[in-house]
Every structure is written in structure tokens, then in C-alpha cells.
Image 1 (cartoon, rainbow, N blue to C red):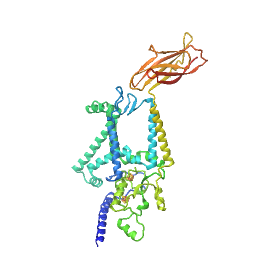
Image 2 (image 1 turned 120 degrees about the horizontal axis):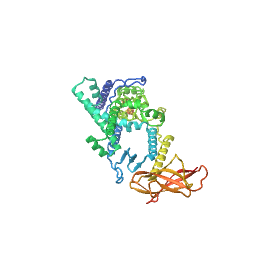
Image 3 (image 1 turned 120 degrees about the vertical axis):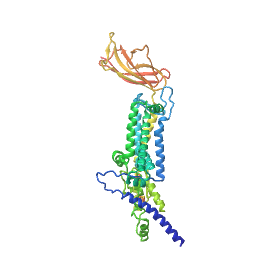
Image 4 (image 1 turned 135 degrees about the vertical axis):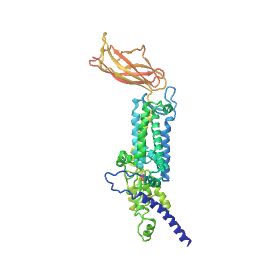
Length: 500
Ligand code: SF4
Ligand code: SF4
């Protein structure tokens, strides 16, 4: 008797929980159809908050990425007395990029190319292992949209309250909530634009200039542009950016394969969908019954409004929030979690056929991407470790190519640019090799030693003449060498010496 009462109490609890879920389902309406028309007006999405493992991961990533973005410009890095002390700085007037101990000059733009290759390969590798994990957790559009939705919930409540409030006529309270939300969004958007410009100038100085209204106009213009784009993209456009503007979902779809783990509705377990009561009846009659109870919680929490039960979807950013929502429902029903999980359709087919499921991370494509990352990363590290801290470039005068001197000698003129990447002045001796006996005159200088200031370049005119007998139409390879007077370090570049 007691057992029967306990069972019926449990059923009542489940029924009441489900009644709540069904009430929400009615509020939301039916899930979107698979066959969408070519054009459909945007249906506003009211994502419901959710708790669970993937939500916690998303919080951690959100705090980490936003923390880095907003605070990094204030991190200092000592490079000596003549260099900027900001750890990460894009110095456009000085044409330098500083990243902690790395300083990249315009001539070294290949490092940026290497970084872009690394970023692309990392994205491909992430995609090969776990689908659009970038989109779900790390993409700036996802992170800022998540932050804006949190602010929205703070002012307008969770999905249900927000939906109801939006259908009610305007009141003072509704107006205050909406105003509070938009003002907070604008403040966050302004901080986002403000943080961006701090990467292009000394951050503490620029903050003071912004506060006193003396910052350069270009800083205000960029803050204005980024305030507007952040407010529009994260506050208003949200999932439309992922669905219509971003090319990555299309590229990603072409790059994926059957082994990539994706957020998947395990229809082998979930179908046929039916209520708890119906499932019991069907099972008692020896008929199949799925675990999906059609509560629609997975759709309500989805930031892009996708019904993952319809299969792979371009709108699904793989954030895993539907997993958390469904696991919570399964827990309430006393069923095992994982009706929605990171899985593959291949595994579902295998399970349907009575075979075991498996995960294959090591595949030719993942190994290839990892090998390219290791190779490019290794080459970049080697190049950085053995980076030249001096440089020399030479441009030969084109008109005239040579001058015949009154004593019969031939003279060629060059513009020589010396580069000193160290943070102290350096003296370089300029010399040439390749044409036997020669005279080298540096215009405006008494000797061949040239001083170059810290982290600077210096241009000089060099006249090279020879009285050696040259072959007709001579074009003789000529090496320009600069030698650091202190360390003896040699840096070489090549050009040609022309004759009649
Ligand atoms: S998949 Fe899970 S969350 Fe979605 S409707 Fe079915 S039971 Fe509910
Ligand atoms: S379907 Fe699930 S994983 Fe995909 S975007 Fe929606 S909540 Fe995230």
C-alpha cells in the first residue's frame, strides 16, 4: 500500500513538472518546421536560462575572454627606457606590433601570416574534433550576445516573464526595464569600443585623455563605430549574424566529416516521442516508446532557436545548452542523461544496427591539421629565436645606372637603409664586397661608421666607384655588409654594380 502511494506521489511530481513544461510549450508555440520558406520574417527568440555543465563552461570562457579583452591593454611589459611599456600594442605611427617579448617590424609581416595560418588550422582542427566549438564558446559574436542576453534577463526577466511582458501594453515599469536594458547595453558597447582603441595607444594615457575630453578625434570615431556595431550585432541582430552574415557555418559544413562530434539528438533513444504515461502504456504493451517527452526545453534554451531534434542544422552553434536543458528534464524523470549529447550520426546508425558506438579523434585530417600547426608553430618559434636584430636594405639608383668619372672609373649610387631593432643606439661599419678594388663614399659623412638610434632606421646615400676593368655591359653582384662595431654581428644584402 505504502509502495503504491509512493509511486503515485512520484508520478504526481513528474506530472506537475511536465505540466509546467507543457505550459511553457503552449506559450512558445510549435517548434519551427524543417521546410522553411525562402524568406521568413525574423521571429524574436527569447532564450531561457539554463544550468548545467556546458553552461558553466560557457560562463568560464565568457569571463576569461572578456577579462582578457578589457584588461590586456593595461598589462605592462618592460622593454627598456626607449620603448613602449604596454605588453600588447599596435603602434601604427611607429609601424610596430608589440606582443610581450615579441616586436614585429613591417618587414617581418610574415609572422602575422604565420599567425593567421596557425589560427585557421586551429579552427579546422577544432571543427574536425568537435564541430562548431569555436562558434558555441569562443566567437566574439557568441560571447557578447551571451553577455547582452544576461543583461536582458536581469532587466526583463527570464523567457516566460519576458514573453508575457512583451505581449502586455506599455507601462511605466516596462518602459523602465527596457530603458535600463538599452542603457546597459550601450555602456557595455561603449566599453568594448573603448577597450579596442586602447590597443593602439598607451592605455593609461589614452584613458586620461578620454576622461578629460582631450583624446584625438580618431579615437572617438573608432569608439563610436564599435559602440554602434557591438550594440547592433550583440543586442539586436544576434543569431541572424550566425545564420545570414557569417561564412563559417557554410565553410564548416564543407570541412566536417562523419566522425566529428556534434551536438546530436539521439533519435535512436528519443523516438517515438511520447509522454511519461503514454510511454509506460506502450512499454507495458510491448511496443517501443522513446525518452523524448516533447517538453521543448531544448528549443527554449537555444540562443538561435533551433530544434536540434530535426538533425544537423546551420543555425546550431554547438553551444551545448540544449544538452544541459534535456539532461535536467531527464533527471526530473529519473532517466539517464545524454538524450542530447556530443555524438555522431554514424554512432546512432551503429547502435540501431546493434553495434557499439565509438569516437575517433585520430584521423588523417586531424593528424594533418595538428602536423601543420606543429610545423608552422615550430618554424615561427625558430625564426623568433634566431631573429636578426639588425637589417640593411639597398636600392640602386635607376637613372643613371652608372656614371663614368673623368679618371675613367665607374660609379654607382645606392640608397642604403640600416635597421637597428635593439633598444640602444648601435654603430655599424658599412662595407661592400664583390668588385675587387673600390672606393666607398657615404654622402655627408667622413667615415664609414654610421650610428643608428634605438629601435630606429637610418637612410644614407652610398657612392661605390671602381677603376677595375669591367666587362662590357657589366652587371656584377655586390654585397652590402653592415658590421656591429661592438658585437661584430654581420648583416648582408645584395644588389648589382653596373658598367657601360
Ligand atoms: S529532447 Fe529532451 S529537452 Fe528536447 S523535447 Fe525531448 S525531452 Fe524535452
Ligand atoms: S541546438 Fe543546442 S547546441 Fe545548437 S545552438 Fe541550440 S542550444 Fe546550442
